[in-house]
Length: 431
Image (tube, rainbow, N blue to C red; front, side, top):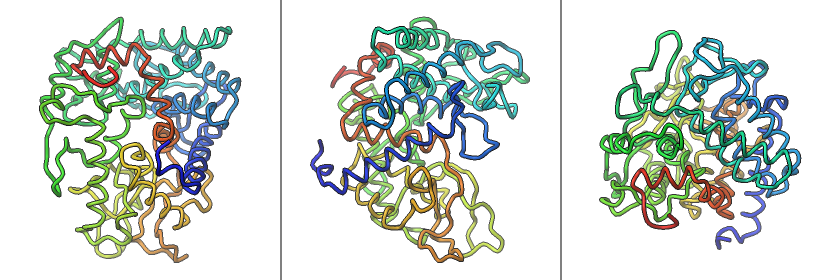
C-alpha cells in the first residue's frame, strides 16, 4: 500500500468514495438486461460505455465487499446475454451491427434511441468491461464458464476492419441512415484503448498501420515547463488507464520522447493543478486543492451572466487552453489518483470539506461551479443536479488501481490486451 494511503483518514475516505460510486451501478440499472442509465434521471437511456465501466466495477465491488460474487455473476451474466442475443444487424432500431453497438439504448428494450450513432469508442469501452468480466470470473461453475464464453464471443464479433471504412484511422461510427461518420480517431485522445483492442482481435484485427496513422497526428507540447502529449480535458488522460497499466511500457512515440502514457497522465494531472493555481481566467475557488477540468455538465446559459462570462451546458472543458467557465468535476481529480496521489488526496479532502457530497447518493457531485454564487450561499456555488454513468464509472476502478493495482493486474493476463499492445509496438515493463 502506498505510504500516502496508510493514513486512516485517506483510507476511509477512499473506501467511502468507492462504495458510493459503486452504488450507481446497482441502482441506476435494469437488472434484467444489465443496462446502465446514462444519467440518474427517470427518462435517461442506457449508455453502453457506462455498461462497460459497470462490468469493470463489479469485480472491484466483490473484492471490496460491496457486492457478493453471486450477485455480480448474476448481473454480469444478464448483461452479456443481452448483448449477445439482442437484435444485431443493419436495421435502424437494432442494438448493434458488425459487433459494434449504438451509443444509447432504451433501458427496457435495449434498442437504439435518439437516432444515435453506432459508436466505435463506446463499444471499445463496453468490450474492455466485457473482457474484464471474462478475466475475473474464472471459476469452473456453469455461470462463470458462460461468462467467459460470452465475453470471448462478443469480442470476436467486432469487425474492426469494417470500422476503418477503407482508411487508415478508425472512424468515429456509423448510422444506418447515412453511413459512416466523417470523423476518424486521430490525435491523442481517449481512443488508445480502442486501437489496442482492435489490434488485439483474433478475428478482424486492425493492421499495425492504423496505429501508426493515429500516432502521426499527436501534438507534443511544453506548457508551464511540463512536456507531454497534450489534451485539454482530463478524462482523455484517464479512460484507457482504467484497464491498461502503462507504467514502463512504451510505443514508438513515447520511446522517442523518453516517456510513457502513465507519466504523460501524471504530467497532465499536475498541469491541471498548475493551471488552477495560476488561474488566468480569475475564476472563483480555483487553487492547489481545487481543480478538475474535463467533460462535464455545466450551468448552461445564465441571463444575465454573472461576472460577464459565458457559461456552457455539457461540454468537453479543457485546461489550460479552455474552454473553461469555472466548472470543476471532483471525479476528474479522483480518476487521476494512481498518477499523482500526493496532489489528488489533498484535493479529495478539500472537496469533502466543501460538503460536495451533501444530498448526493453517489458521493461527490458530478460537477460544480463556485464562480456562480447561489442563494443558499454554499461555497461550491452551482451544483449539477445529475450524476452521469461515465463519470461514476472510472472512480471505483481507478481508486482500486491506486490501492492494489487490481484491475491492471487482472487485465495484464488478457491475451487481447497484451497482443494489441505488442502489435501497436509497445515493449518494456510487464510486457
